[in-house]
Picture 1 (cartoon, helix red, strand yellow):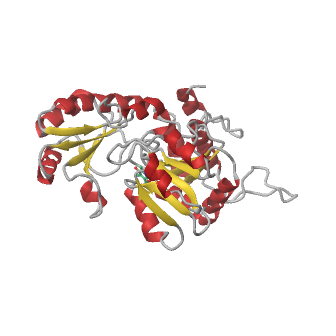
Picture 2 (tube, protein in one colour):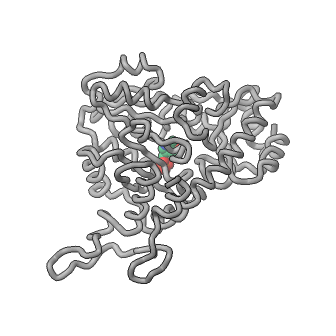
Picture 3 (cartoon, protein in one colour):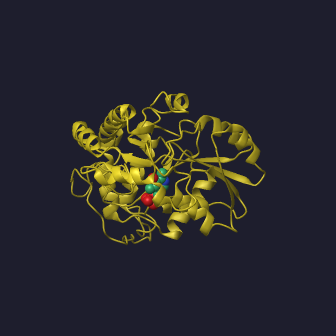
Length: 370
Ligand SMILES: *Cc1c(COP(=O)(O)O)cnc(C)c1O
């Protein structure tokens, strides 16, 4: 079935007891055992599993084309479960513009336990030069945040496979509507469900989706269950509800992003625009090969310095100046000041999460601010 149908049906079947068409929210933390000590409902205790979380994990697995999925209380908790699942001493290769929250996690929480190199993973020679016998994982994030750099997933997988290295892909910016890393050979997909999956800027969540129920996956499941960084039944319910409209919301985000790119590209006060769908994007050919469509995120550099970028952002009335992305409302952010002193993000760069407002209103707001 196509992704729109999967999104609507994978997380839903009428409740067996009540025949309610929409699954009820099960708040119970514990589940009754039968006389013989078994668990006829299939659940024991809600840290291990809960009907709403099971339903969410089903949708997640089906949308990414995986064998199984695990839901977490945030994207960072999902990322952390991956790092915690690796044997001490494992070497990780990650992008030099990795999402700063996960980069900081590795540097601050895993130093001394794991080793890592932050490199340009899309340069196959650089990548080859950093692979060593302890390397257990190559982490990629494509398109990247906030430079929208694209990594060739098939190329990375081919290099990793030579020595049995696992490949995990942060697919938050693309979503399975725009890109399916498991189909391109990745072993694991990670999401911040806080973004497009939730889609309304009102819940935190994270997800991991696996290609195979491998030994590594069992370990990740252990981290989820024993660590307990799980989403509440209410958050799972809200996410299942949101996932049903993901493919249609993405159409709107993509449509508006492309029209904003067209507008900004021609604007005399704009120095450059970063969007994988632009023929001028340095990895456009890779993006065309591996992406189904180019997503709802874009960045642009204004002509001038940081103060000029801030003048533009402060002049906007409809765009909200805030971090995060993927909600129905358009957001804009001066990324360099969020990422801290070691950022590689240009100081005149603004990152845009195209929302679902009418494009004419978004363009009018940018016109007056620029
Ligand atoms: C937001 C984000 C994360 C972290 O997710 P949280 O839900 O904020 O913990 C990871 N990767 C990317 C690309 C993100 O945008």
